[in-house]
Amino acid sequence: MGQFYGIFQDIKELNMGGITELGIYEGIFSNVYANMKNSAQELDYYIENAFCVGKSILEIACGDGGNYMIPMAKKGFEVDGIEISKSMISRFYEKQNRLSEKVKNRLNIYNADIFEYETEKQYDLITIPSTTICLLADDEVRTKNLFRKIYKWLKPGGRFMFDYRVDQSLTSEFISPIFSEVDKKMPYVMFMQEFNNIIVGRGIVNMYVETMENGEPKKYIASSNKKIITDSLVKNLLQEIDFQLHNTYMVEMKNAKVKLIVLEKEIEKNE
Ligand SMILES: C[S@@+](CC[C@H](N)C(=O)[O-])C[C@H]1O[C@@H](n2cnc3c(N)ncnc32)[C@H](O)[C@@H]1O
Image (cartoon, rainbow, N blue to C red; front, side, top):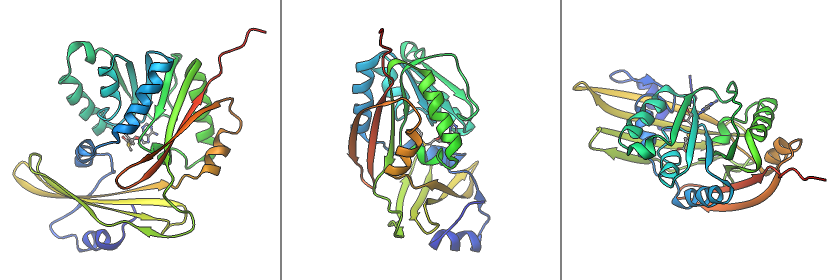
């Protein structure tokens, strides 16, 4: 059960007409996610770095692939994705089926928890986009082990890119305005709000959706609870791993300011 605040808490408590709580990437919420636009600028940075290192890419926690996997496959890259949510995997297959055979064949998705996932394959570029690191950093030891695996999965000279929010304070509370969206085709109406640092160190997003299923009105609510990532946490997570810092970019989005880090696995030197 998630944490709900403000109007979302009221809606949940009133429970008029029955409200189902889902995971924020499950069921109707995977459709809502698919409708959200990512930053074109960030996609360009991933593409630019991919062109520098090679053809093979792994996207960790790739969602439905719509934001990065598919655009990168269209540019000619071979892209694998790992995703835990079955709803996101279904959305991915729907999108993949609409692609040309050539692009389709450059894409592979695996339904797995990245902390459990193992492979012998090595990649030129590994990414964790869309500030997803905040979902993977709750347990420091587990995250450091994930970073070690990523290092192992990279070819020498390969790059690892991930991003995190830099506009969330660890010292003050912040409640965003309510954001709303209507999709007349699906159809649904969605309300969303962010509650930062009400629980210290956590960014909580509440979402509420009303939709129609088989001619019946349906109401869903979801909450995600993410760790607020700081520069010092990132420094600590990377401390024991042999990555070289290659570059950082700052990306201004509509509702967020993001730092994108590019790390490189050094090419082994022949002494
Ligand atoms: C913010 S979305 C990003 C999706 C995609 N990378 C993008 O940029 O559009 C985060 C995704 O991480 C997935 N996820 C969360 N924890 C995971 C885990 N332990 N292993 C694999 N995927 C995970 C969620 O299901 C969700 O689809």
